[in-house]
Length: 429
Image 1 (cartoon, helix red, strand yellow):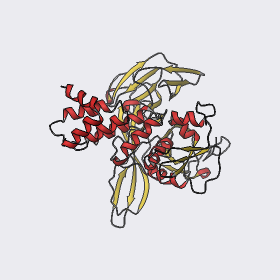
Image 2 (cartoon, one colour):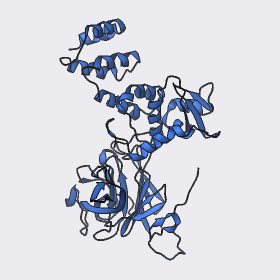
Image 3 (spheres, rainbow, N blue to C red):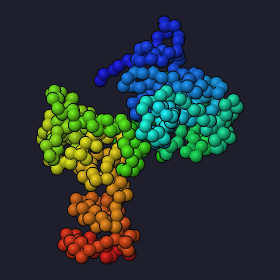
C-alpha cells in the first residue's frame, strides 16, 4: 500500500486559508470529507467547502459555499444522483458545483453532474462556483419534527451519509434519521449516544455509527447501504449503454491497452491474453476483487491447478468487451457499447463477476432487443445457457409477437436447434 500526503495542517503552524497545489494549500479545522468517486474529494470547513483534485493535488475553495448561518457539520456525495450534500446543525443543503467555461465570444455554464450545457467552441475551463440550496430543515430554527423538506426540524446534525435509493442518513443529536429521495425526513432510531459524530457504510450493508466516547453502534435495516455499491457494485450514473462514459473512465479505458507495451515483470500484476492475441496488464487485486474466476486462478491455493499464475489465457474473450470490463474493475463504473453487449454478458458471466454487474449488462441487452433481433437474441441466449436471460426474451417475444419478424428460415432454425424452446413458446398463453 502506498500512502501519499497531498497537503497537511499541523497545530504548530499559523492557521491560514489558502488554495494551491499539494503542500502549498492550507486548511482551517476540517469538519467533513466526501469523495466524489471521480478523482476528487470535497472538504468541509466551518465556513466554506473546498475541492481537492487527487491527481494534481490542486485545492480550490468554492466561491458561494458559505452557509447562510452557522457552520458546516457534515458532507456526503450521492453517487447515484451525482450530487453533493452538506449540513449545518439544523439544515440540509444540496451544493450545486458549477464550472464556468469561457470562449472568445461568450460564457457558458455546465453543471458538475455531467449535464452538457456548453458548446464545442469552449476553449478553457474557468473557476468553480457553488450554489447552496436548502432542501430540509431551517437555517436557524431547531427542533425535533419529522416531515417533508423545510417542515422537518433537526436538533443538532453532526454527520450525514448518502445511501441507497438516493436516501440520506442523518445523525441528529441522539437520533438516526432518514431523508427519502422526495425530501421526507423520518426518525428511524432514538436513544443513540449524544456525542455520535461519524457514520460509514460497511460492505455487509450495515451502517457503523461512531461516537466521541469510544462507542460504536451498528445499524441494520433492509433498506440501508451506500449510494454507490462498494463491494463490486456499479455506479448508477450510467444506467443505459447508450450514454457516454465519463471522461475519467474513457481515459482509463484508452490507457489499459498501453500498459502492456514494455511492461516490467511485476508480482502485483498479471498478463491477460485475449482472443486475437491482445494482451492486457492488470493488477491482481483489481481482478480478484471483481471476479471469482480470477480469485481462484490468481490466489495461491485458490482451487485451480495453476493458481498463482503470472499469465492468463482467455482465448474466447472478446478484447474490446474485456477492456471495458477491466475499466469497470478499476473504477466501479460500468459502460458497454451496444455492439459489445453479447460478448460482454458472456464474458462477465464466465468470469463470475458480481451479479449486479452481470444483471445490469443483461438489462442493457434486453433494452436494445428489436422485433428483427429477438429471435437471434433468443437463440444466442439458449445456445450459451443464459438461464436468467432466456425467460425474459421468451416473454418479450410473446408480448411483442404481433410485431416480431419471423421468417421461414428463422422458424426452421429455431425448430432444429431448440425444439424444446419451440414447445415452450407454443404452450405459453
